[in-house]
Length: 545
Image 1 (cartoon, rainbow, N blue to C red):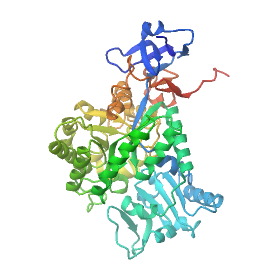
Image 2: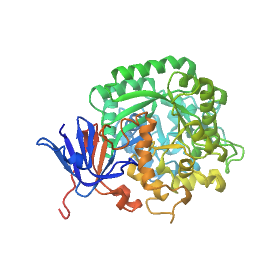
Image 3: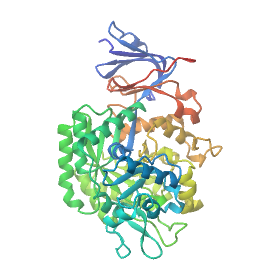
Image 4: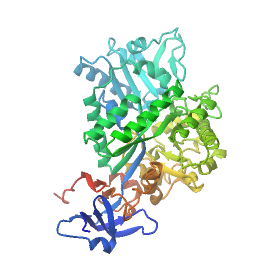
């Protein structure tokens, strides 16, 4: 057997404790066929030799919680993601509306929630430039919306309308809606009115987004929010050869009518297995246990520091969440539960424990995503229940979101026990990493740098924020590779570099172990291979060229 591709000329980090570093790797028929000198011996006349040129080769990365379709579509609207002030957002809306006079709705996604004091956005600022067409913008976490008066009117939100279930319409002193909508109960009445993008636009969004993910070294993603109509979009993209990654689809289950939705979940899973062209699975079901701290909707055990009458919002009644998780678990699905606040995390753990008790032992690998705040009594329950803690490590820094919204709402005691990655690893829990893009950057090297340093890109604070929760570079790399492979039930397919496993690889211009952690985001990703097939290749310009 000759090698189709041979990698040599650099350090090859296998991620395998039994043989962590080697100097050569051979790929044959999409699989790793040999390492070290045995790999060099497989070179033949037709072998492509990839010279690492002093750089490195590693197991490719996965993203355990990301929104490729939702984010790809959202960013095709008003470009508000990089705006640094309310004035910039309003100007972007005005300009885009003028360039798109036929657009019935004006939409944009992923602007920063700290641009307005207290995260409160006023419809009148948007009305001043667009009074006659509905405008709906969503913050980067997608849990808060900013609407103009016309959009509020179309959604039925007036001074006399009741507060929606599982959501909040923020009001002025006179009872009129301010323009800020929190959580899906308030957002959904407007989102249901927005015309769906056409099939070609959705396909293009997936093509562009997955190509960008591949260029960052990613070969597998967990789409953590897939609605029924979107299953067909993913299948169409896979069959058209438009995907640069493999994907697990997290089928959304909401509290309203969840029992009636169960047959549809099973049907969607079967359809994906039959029609997904070998690139897709659909064995996860996505739940939202609560909201987010920044909008005051994460479910807390004790009241918010800046709002003593509020504990936030649990999206499910505890008994209903336990019943729903038990039901999908009985169907063989993997629960994937968004939980931010300590009460939200407790509710998720209680539901998973109930499912295990009622359904009996099996390899279920339940996931709790984000895990921002955990009650100390609940830390050991992750390992005890076999729960995977899926962190978005880029969040573990003192950026403006943390300093201007999160910390004032949690107070110092709770603020000092956020994103306890090291503590959970030390407890024996399994950890995977993700980005939650478009909430934050999808590049794993940026998340790895933050997990290791707990610093902002500017190196603040010295020594790191909550330095006891810093983890090693090896642990961070593992969480993005073998950790995500374990979450995907694909440990025996990828996540480490070992003969017989799939050749899912990422080539870096430098050895990450020789780079200061804070500089990791600047290391170029030169190549990504999915089952031995290149999905991204780039060549660095010669020095001085």
